[in-house]
Image 1 (tube, one colour):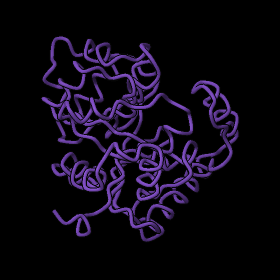
Image 2 (tube, one colour):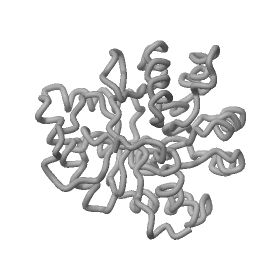
Image 3 (cartoon, one colour):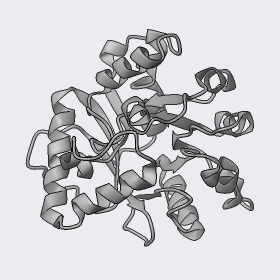
Length: 264
């Protein structure tokens, strides 16, 4: 497989937060960081979010990103035609407390009501679009098993999606994911930013679950360059992946999940 001929695919990004680069604290608990983020954007207008989105889009384009799976809750994507040359984007509206226009995806099981989690993922499945959700990031408060409980009567819906972060996934969780085309999305710089525990990459790989590498947002990462994410990964965990595995995680693997949609 010649990765040089494949587009770089960022499987998790929040372009609308790009203007927060360098403004938020490192090594703070997530909810303290979130409180600071809310203070920073408290007076942002729709235009501010759009400028931030375009800033991130320009940065991603400048580092040869081929496709972006972007999530945001301010619906900041400009109306087409875009005002700049741009990287193709799958813009997902991220549901927190209230429904948003299609296509949408849930933020998390702690912030998004169960009925909206179910609605968003069902819509994605019907449209052939991969869903995503922040899950198993902190501790036992956002477990994969609690996510599946939302779909206990219709587990067949829980396919073709991205679990973002997944630091506390268990072998049982990973086994289900491997059998149902659900990938883990690891964001190396964001992981380091928050000082999360080391991922059990050996368990991830042994499970057969797909692994993607992504950037997250500039509110918790230094770069939207996927190659910089790979550098961070190898600096911190030099033996966790081969170069071939790492390149697949930003090309062929996320590409498999986006192959059935033409919305970007």
